[in-house]
Length: 127
Image (cartoon, rainbow, N blue to C red; front, top):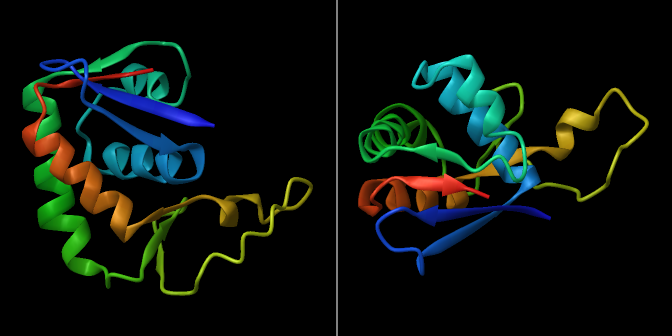
């Protein structure tokens, strides 16, 4: 389960992201101050059809390229709390634990894919 990011300039161009990668990605956008609180909350909701403009997508890409990706190794991932780790995800689901946040991590590979999408899309809609 996850989200489809549909390019507003080309509805045939869709990037899929799972919940585990998306939630920390939204928190990176929040930390950068790129969107207001209401729109950020919309990015956490399925079927809200939250739209990101071309300019906003480019700002997200710049932030990822300038401030996030240079701090990571290719095997890294960003946890929900914003800390980076090179420890591989153990894929153990912790639904009844204080460690649930460990299940969420945005991988370097995903962040690179998302940055490239944001650099070239005509804005996007989250579905």
